[in-house]
Length: 282
Image (cartoon, rainbow, N blue to C red; front, side, top):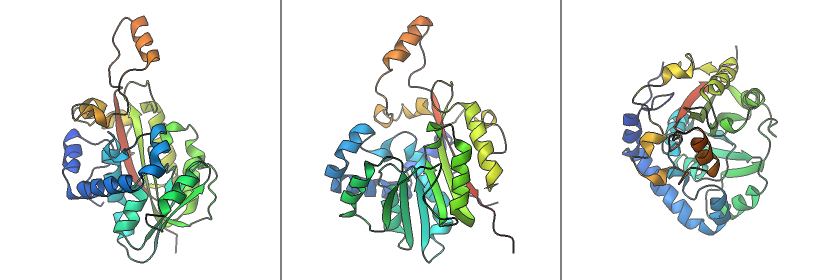
C-alpha cells in the first residue's frame, strides 16, 4: 500500500495546518492569486454566485492539495495525461495542473451552460490545455476509457444519484485509471451530506472501484476522531475561510422553536478518497 503525505478519509486538524504551511500549498496559493487577478473581469459575476477565492475556503484548502497529491502518479508518468474535472465550476485548479505538468490536459465538465463564456474569456490569458464542455455527469458526453484520471471536488454531496454518476466515472476512465473524490460531511445531519448518506456514497464507489488505501472500509462514524478538522476548528483560523457569515433566518427560527441554540458554524468536515479502476485482465 502506498504511503501518501496527506491521509485519506477525514483530515486531522494537525495535518490540515501542516498542509497550509507546505511549499505545495504556498505555490498553489500564489498561482491562484495571479489567476484571480488576471481574470477578475471574466470571473466577476460567477464570484457573486459562489465565492471569489476558492482556495481560501475551509474545505478547499485541504481538498485541492489532496487531489493533486493523489493525481501525482499519473501526472508524473510522462507523456500525455488526460484528466477530467467533473462538476468543475470555474476555479484556478485545472489551470494550475496544466501549468505545472506540461504533459497534462484537463477537460472541465459542468451542467451550467453559462460557464462556457467564462472559460472562453479565461482561455485568452491562461493555459490552452484546459477545455470546457457542458454536460450532465449522469450521462457524460465522453467516449469509454478516455481519461487517465478523474477528479470530483465537493460535488457529489449535492446529488442523490450517486450510482449513475459513479458508473459514468468508471466508464470514462481507462483500466488502471485513478478517481479522486471529495465531499463535505454534515456532522449533525442538518446539511448535505449526512453521515448515513456518505456511507451510501462510499458503498457505491467501492462497488465499482478498488479502494487503494482502505479509506472506505469502515462506516464513516468510525473514522471521526476527536482531533478531526471541521468547520468548528476552521473558524479558529478566521471567519473568512467559511462561506457563511451568520445563521440563516430558517436556522435562527428553528433554534428558537427548539428553545436551544444550534451550533454555529454548521458542524461539518470533509472526506477525501482515491480509488482505481481495475486494470484490464491480460
